[in-house]
Image 1 (cartoon, rainbow, N blue to C red):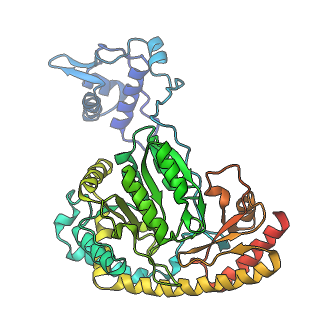
Image 2: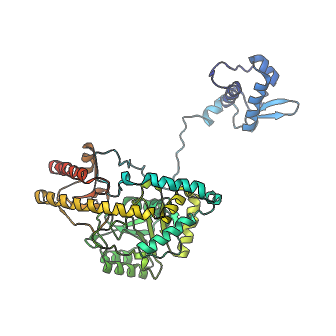
Image 3: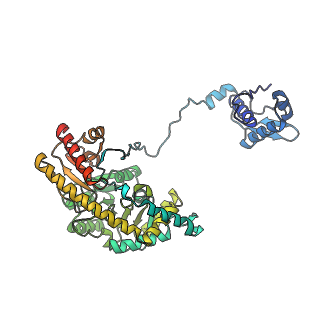
Length: 481
């Protein structure tokens, strides 16, 4: 006899309660494969339920595969279930059995990257989010909803919204002197880096990067199985002789650079070095990934053209995004490469997702088309230039008292300051004082060095807040470093 408690979980519909309890009895072996159930009428009489309620429960279990229905015979427990006894159930379906996953590669769980909520925030790539024209941009989101052809929202166009690609191409030609035949729009620059890594790298292939560099790029290459080769740097960028030696001795497929404002040191890679690096990569058949993450913000002189603007062999893959102009949550990045390379990257993009956020892409396209994008960029460039000068002034004052050193960057959103002290623990200690700051150990592959540099972002804070925060931070440096 099947005994079912239909009074438990009073808020649950009766047919669901009956189905849940029958399912549980099968799992526990109380009802075994090929067991016949009483008729729906009998079950209804035994448990004071409506026959239609019982039929609904039984039909749901048939649809799920727990029961089968035989014509003129009724309902039976499915004989194909791999359960024959309660003893076997305890082995086959035990919740205590842990199956170890066999990952292709084991990655470290991401660390908490939360950078908001601090009294003073010196994150190097953080724009001033309070200055973004949200109400203005909202109008373009509304326009994207009202004006757009319905075809924009289908799966087609996985390489990016055509309207946005045209606007980006026009902007790059005018603002950076970079002519792109085509683009791939990505969900941020990190997706672009991952696509390039997957397209080029087999396990054991080499990627050359800057000794002090951008950790997420490094992680993208290592996760694919790349061997990472760190290149020495000086105040003009990576050393050409270090690259030449690396290429002679190793199987290098990619060179990753941040040539305009090197991350994290802010150094601009000099023209002679750019030319020498390009010639070496051309000679060895190495492709260059040029990560131009904050080209817009240059203050002391006009910025150098991207390396991709003078690329006769088509070996430069150019990556940028709007995260520093807009905000990281917009997830609008893009890359440009020669046609055969771009085709492979587009194909890999389709494997990740068929479509980016079409609504945001269309809104950005309309915003750019009507001039709002560049108006906002000019406003922010002017504001950041003022904050750049203010940080220079205050660091110069601190330099006289504390014997720190720094080179004034030509652009970007941060300073790279030599504190002349060991700052290995400074980031952790600063967080206890409600100050966010990043230091040299977070960027370096040379774990044997003494770390003395601090990366100080100036874009996200007003000048008075910046000044007060610097005073507190360097008081902490004096006290604990």
